[in-house]
Every structure is written in structure tokens, then in C-alpha cells.
Image 1 (tube, rainbow, N blue to C red):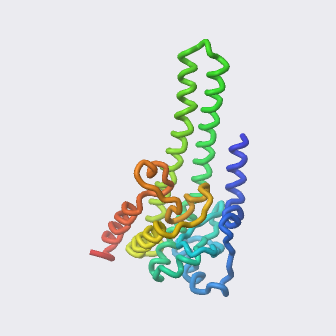
Image 2 (image 1 turned 60 degrees about the horizontal axis):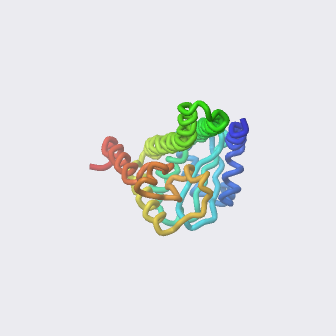
Image 3 (image 1 turned 90 degrees about the vertical axis):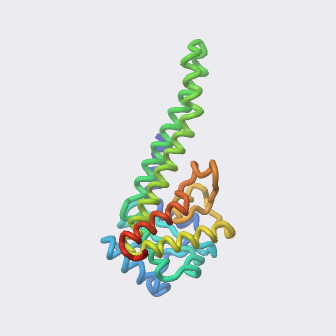
Length: 247
């Protein structure tokens, strides 16, 4: 119950919580007219209300969207991302973030987190039960196994859902911006810079960003909130070919 209430609170106040954690500042149209114009154009194409726009004070290039629904959405970009991307690439990134808003991914990930938390709690009860009833050896062993495997399985499922939402946001971003090859180029740039310029983030918010600020390889990719950048780029270029934008 406590885990569910915490996730419910995170859902309703996600915009304020995440912006505060990243020290992001909501800006006005006058403070960033070009950025505002791009977002306004893209949100009209997507059929969305105008989201708030925020700037994160860091040179590490990245972006994220938050808010419990399209009416309370915030699209945030770092200072660094506006300095290394072209206008077309920035449109692709912002289209991706608006894709998250349109797909209501904050709600999806809140449900996933609640389910993962419930599985973990049930697993813990299983372990406690195994210690309180030592006479039933077989049942005890099964409960302990559940307690060990349950939380791991829950986390893997949650990460898999997060990765699938990134693919869907890439697809939506390609459709909204109309420039999938530009989004692919942006992802390549962001991934390369992320290897050398780390961004200070709380691990609980890593899944929000367009490029994982806590990147890892090998076995750790199973626990990654993001799909491999190479696969995302490959899929976007295939969309671009189907749209006739590249050969």
C-alpha cells in the first residue's frame, strides 16, 4: 500500500519533483523564442496542448519530458543540447519528447513501477513466511527462491517496458518532426558525448532522458532503461528510407 501511495504521489507531482531534482527552470516565450517556436510547431502537429518548457543548467546534452498528462506536461532540455545540435536535430529530439507526452508514458511507467513494487513486496512476504514455517522444507525453499528471484524479475520487466517506450517515442518523434534521420543523427551525437561528459542525475530519473545518463554495456544492458543507441538509430534510418528521405 505504501509503495502504491508513493508511486501515486510521484505520478501526480512528477513534474515538480523531477524539475526540482534537476534544478530545471521553467522559461517563458521571451526567454527562448526559438525553442518555444519549435515546440509550438511540433505540439500542433501532434495535436497536443502547449507544454511548459524548462532549461536544465548543465553542459551535458540531454532532454526529457514529464507531467502526469498532456495538460500538465513539461518538456525540458539542457543548456548543452542546444549548443551541439542543429535545428533539425533539435526538432527530432523535441518530437521524441512530445511522443512520450502523447503516448502518456509517465502513466505507463508509474503503473510498471507500482507492479514491480508489488511483486517485490509479495516476494518479501514469501521469505518471511519461509522462516516462520520451517517444518515444510519444500515450501520454505520455494518461498526463499521466490524472494530472491521475484524482485530481480520485477526490475527486468520494468526496464523492458521502459526500453519499449523509448522505441515508441522514437517512432512518434519521427512522425511528429517528419525528420527521422535528424533524430538518428541527434542520438548518435548525444550518445558519443555521453561517454565523455557524465551528467549528475538520480538513478530513479534516468529513464526519463532521451539518452541514458547512466550508460552501461554487456550484462548491464539488461538493466538499462534505454535500448542500445545503435538499434534505435538503425530503426530510425529505416523509417527515413520508408519515408523517402534517404536512400
